[in-house]
Image (tube, rainbow, N blue to C red):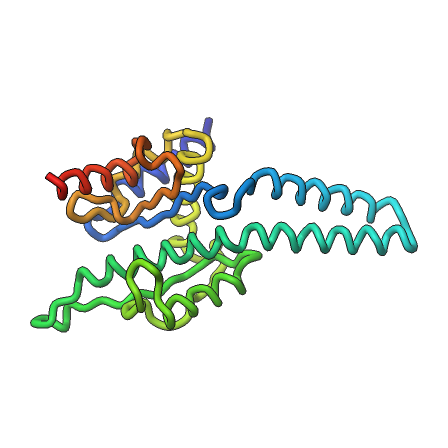
Amino acid sequence: EEREAIISAVYRTIANAHNPGLYLFGQAIEKGMIVPDFEKHMGDALDRKKQAEQTVKVTAGEKRRQARQDEASAKEECRSLSNPVLARGIEGLCTQFELFLRRFYDQTRPESQQRGLMIFDHASYEREAGMLVDQFREAGTGAVGQLYNIIQAPMFADSASTRMLQLADFVSNAVFRRYEYRDTRYFDGIANRFDEHGGVVHGLAHMTSESAVCMCPACFSRRTARRASII
């Protein structure tokens, strides 16, 4: 109960943070839309990895060497399955952040221009994330072209050393539970903090095969905006 009370207090703090000082951005991706049968293939690869790890512990000699090779092969398959999803997620975040920063641009008031820096938590995908952001900064993303307002390469830090990354962890957890398990108890309280402009929740994107009927803020606000433009 005490742990839950602390977690709930953190989400209340996020929900009530100084407005408009805090804007949230997030991506929810149905992995099967990027990699067909993702869950099945990833499950198989993880099972092989676990089996190989167990074999390494209880064998020696040639069998152990073969098990290590099997473990490395399974890890590589997991990475190859995850990388396209990671790329799509980071491209989406870059697009969201760039569009947000562009709204501050005013030729008559150059002092109002804003530049942004992306900071990631240290993770196993650190190298890939850095290369992807660099790639999108130079070549642009499909939605917005070149990224003019995201400066330099991304930085990486330990979440234990910065409160903003700890906040990002809580937001990620809320988004994950909302879209993976339909558990909205944390998400609903912070949903209105995702960047919104012109009636569209640009700060939240949901890539799903059910976008035509999904009632989440990301999908619903985009459908409503499209219908309004048609009318």
